Length: 308
Ligand SMILES: *Cc1c(COP(=O)(O)O)cnc(C)c1O
Image (cartoon, rainbow, N blue to C red; front, side, top):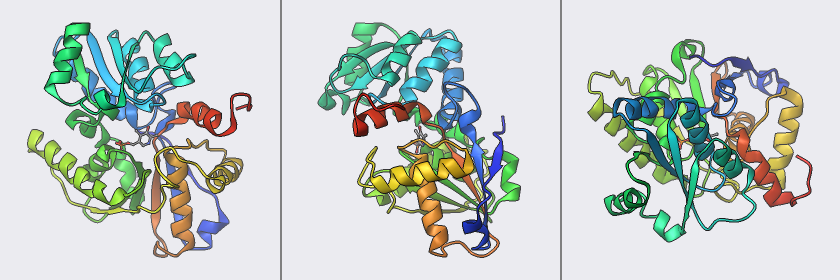
């Protein structure tokens, strides 16, 4: 499915001789639109083919992936288990109460334990507690997740020169890069500190995908990271960022999430202002979703009673 593209109508862009559209993958599904929709589809298909009844996955307490997996599992008639990083707090936040409402069983583990989530020992321990399940890694960031992300851009690339997107694990960036023609470029904006190392993870995701799907033709577009737009770290906010989101939403009527797409759009406007793009360049910005997490971020920064 191809998401809609909303062109940005903005004199700050026309003044620089560039144009930009936003690929609204956030609109693909009410509860799990965004890149998680793409990252889950082949994972769920693989789970079905394996005859699995139960999906187990991992995430933080505000995780878009946890919310998306809970909703998608329910829709596709799987049971689901969410292994949540850190101790439980009562009452459940909006992300976790949504997931629980979809029928996901939530199991909190210490941060230390969570760090072992990819070891066979930990999975065996979980099997002893929960019985058989089909594991999907944090963020859905495995080969099947990357495969789904190769379908995000589709034929829309013919109308653009550059794709820009926000990065966590880099799996989405890898999938998008795998799908682009060699004349295109893709710019990733890591949303955490010291993002430069992500290049290695992106390369690893690409290599892993090509090992599984050797017939795939990878044209090797240019891949760039812009690492200076983390605003202090993962899920960190500043007044500047809140102000930018408010002003952008008022002007465009496109909602942004505070963890990923806000930093992406800020990076885009800042780079445009600094003449990073060449005249005539057409940029496609991927709206990767994540709006469900905004309630939690606003509570954290403004307290419980702030209207949202
Ligand atoms: C998970 C997520 C990302 C990051 O995707 P990666 O493949 O981990 O890089 C970006 N945007 C949103 C809204 C997300 O939920």
